[in-house]
Image (tube, rainbow, N blue to C red; front, side, top):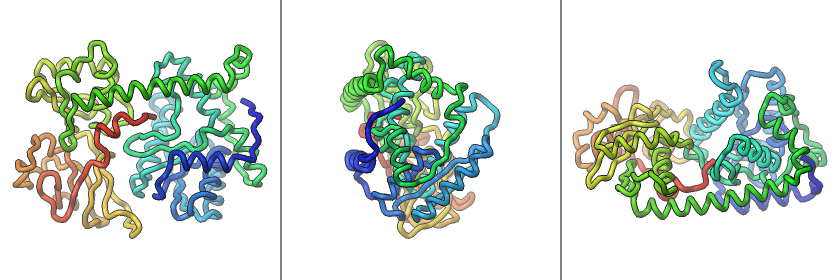
Length: 424
């Protein structure tokens, strides 16, 4: 996908992207593979952020022997820039589609690394070319408005901000800039392998241009879809403010929010509710959602995707996190520059006397050691899914259930302000 723009303004456009979308001076993570896009991301970030505010991560999938050399290249450049660099290994279990599994495994590794270091934002090197290719692949899959939005510069996923400062730049722009700066990068041969959908989308673009489907036109389509998506999200947010109430980590959905027969807003609100309570970026399948809500409206207690839905007063339902679906978090290091706390289950932030021997997981059966749990005013099931601090098998604190011992717990983003943000 050739472009005619000069590389001279690469730094200016990168700086403008940061100014438009990334205002915080908190430390950020950089996902760096060693390819031209991600190497440019790290090098540009180092020009506009202090090195001690940057951390880089590379994922070794163990699929290509060349990956070791690519990661070594990243490590060397990171060291020269003064940026802390970590390498995480990922191994395919042989199940499902390799590319999809690698993509999910890569994200999980980045997410866990970011949480461990209390990073709230991770930067990725997606470019304008990636934007066009994503649109083409989603068109081929018959995606609706949400899918055809492709990628936003700033999104949220699993409680993290995902920032893409290179979306306004092409691969040609970045490689011209790297060449000009005498910066080395690696070329992944799989980027030319026609077995992969993204590569085929890239290869057919030249033919599509002859039909008038130019880069400019495709990016205009993305812009139109994003505008339509935002309108639907805004309508859903207004509906949610009227019919959904947050109760600590639970949601109370009124009767109008349970009517998923026709309108978009209730469907969007319900799907977002499950995603928010379950701390997931992906929403339940629509058919499963319809069946679950239908059973709850008949008075049944049902589970779906890590959530429990129970009947509530006046025809409403309560949506609660399922304690068994949560996982433990361990803060592996104590850094004086980081907050005295830890993010848990992607919605909670716990603050208190941090110690390296502590773990953070759902209260569960530990509720028996919380004599004042009823005073919290929440159902027992809700409290069992609330965060607790443990030392081995001993319960240290359960702030939501009334056992504080110097600890506090708060939801870091409420449903109404976060569930209708732009999704990845």
